[in-house]
Image (cartoon, rainbow, N blue to C red; front, side, top):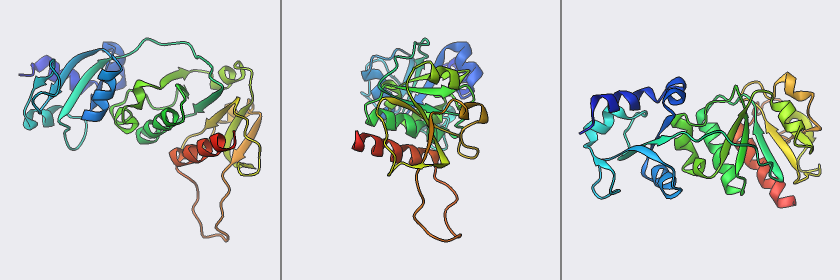
Length: 240
């Protein structure tokens, strides 16, 4: 049986300040929870509506799971995991950074893309949505277990300190299909509505874009930032 203080804690962990205060976050879904457990990520609470999910999981019925889920529909598995300590940037050959991303689904998808392309870290501006937001965790589909997210106050200065070119994805940049995309570089993706912040633009070595092929005025205004990241990464690793 879930205790009242546990129920209250799980509910509070939807809010960033409580995640920081308690050094805990929530993951829902069998795949995501399994990925974290298999990565030896320490957990405080493990709940399941399915028998034999895990020897340390407490069995709850779906009605109880509905009372604590952070989503419209409950998952059969929920875990409360320990927030990791902050780590130094390891400076991989290719660095991906995001600036002021507000949509949890987009950030989770970008984390998943980093994992797919073999990258182990993602550098985020302080104004980017928290990577331990339950919706980010779910959208990452377990990739959060393999991709470290660093939150940096001065993103431009931090990228410059890595001593390699810094390219920003903008609508005015050179076409990624014509430009040379060096693998040893940093690539920055800006917010869904405003793009890369003005303070960061001055740190860029160059700007790159995904050209639009539909002619005429009646066309899509922009690409979703997660979709744009996928196209960039695919082209980067194809040409390297």
